[in-house]
Length: 106
Image (cartoon, rainbow, N blue to C red; front, side, top):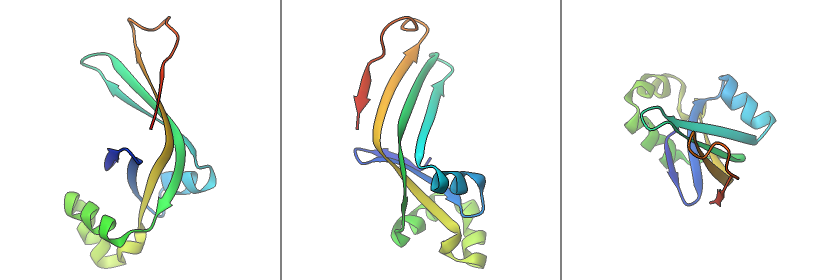
């Protein structure tokens, strides 16, 4: 994951990776974030849409220097960026395990 804002979650991967292929084939996705220290889990469901934004790809490579040799060799076309939109999130803890879920839309 690269970032999150009111528009959704941004993920970056490479075009040959399973994640890229799977999100293209089935854009309905769910991601889970877990904080082991506090035993809190946030589950987010939404729809993956591919983002073609060269400036964003360049920014991602700046933030992730390990991608620089790849893009220098193959170009920015190997970088795939997806935005998860129409997000619905729920929070789970052991304390709320038996409670009804509350959902946040963003």
